[in-house]
Image (cartoon, rainbow, N blue to C red; front, side, top):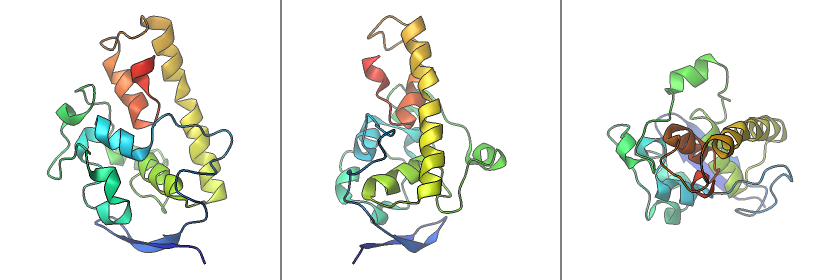
Length: 167
């Protein structure tokens, strides 16, 4: 029997089932460079993203996470810069699926855990692949390892599980 995961946070209540083992059996086109735990430890989304839904995910993801339950704090981001758009922008553009009302990172966390939704997975993986253009821009415009070059773009890549520290 598939494991049932309970959702009970400010934005969503319900449950989903896991179809794959955690961190395994990803679509062949989806090769994130960072796990959700690594992203949270590095500092993403101003520390605000996952503060009310910790019970849904493994405790180990939050041991060294940089979180701020009160507000978005860009100083918690790895590059100490705001590289986020408000959720309302994402909603207005139609990028939010009802199953994941917080957006791409919520989808990724659940996908990483083992949830599969073939149509939505394909859409999100397509979006993830499109972000690579920012990595190409860094490679073209920044000396390798020069982390001060284009920090907003580097932070945005971290938000999409690309390790921009190695570009």
